[in-house]
Length: 86
Image (tube, rainbow, N blue to C red; front, side, top):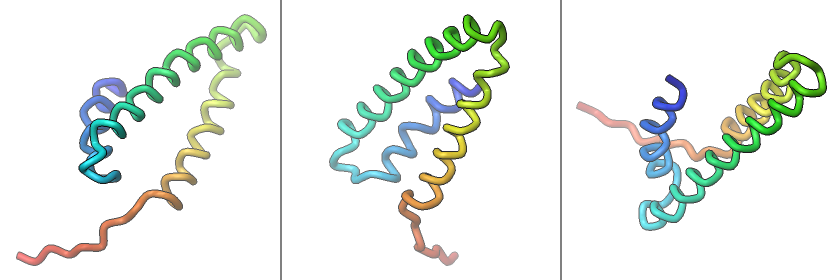
């Protein structure tokens, strides 16, 4: 569900957060970063399992990265202050 949700939300989010004239380039960067994270995450998870004998230790760096992502999102994403009246 997470993979499908991300693939549905990422194109629209990229279009909203970045200038439309640079959409193709920006979405290419977002999608490439997603692929690099997928490869790096699986390699890191495998390495941690080899070292500790369990995947449980992998959740700590994952939680740390999630917190960093939340902080970056709160402070760096542009906000739309337009109000639509009906």
